[in-house]
Image (tube, rainbow, N blue to C red; front, side, top):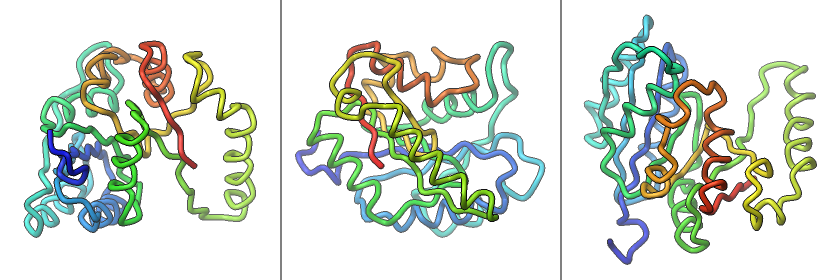
Length: 215
């Protein structure tokens, strides 16, 4: 394992289904990351729009981007969980970063997350996303959602305790140490659960591993 944090490989894993209007912005923000060792895997989950073409066009300009074609969802699996599982099986990184296809990261996000994960011995680091409002209703409700999330969780206690219910994990950004993801069984262990991010956070804490949420 390299002593230089930015040389520890991060596999960025992006499930995408009919995301032609979002995936380009997401991938360009990933390509712009100030991080040395990174692979970007996108799983086209049987899209019926131009998602596949957009990803392939970007992959031709950056060798770190690789597109995978998703297979049919097996019985008992939720579609997104199956997509994330397929991505995890192809990932080579020491860290696994799950990112939604409509997420745009600032250029220092990956470096900062890895540094915090290493420095604070965090097994699952998640970030509360900044939501872009598309209408007046969203502008009013998004700040309330964020406020409510932090009010019902006593954050200092949540970071110290193993109480699995004192956690809030956001699927837009979940950085796992690979060993931790494997230890909790990954998405395979929650294959039928539609709220994958919440349950992965709880599973991490139940296992006695360290979970941390950043705003």
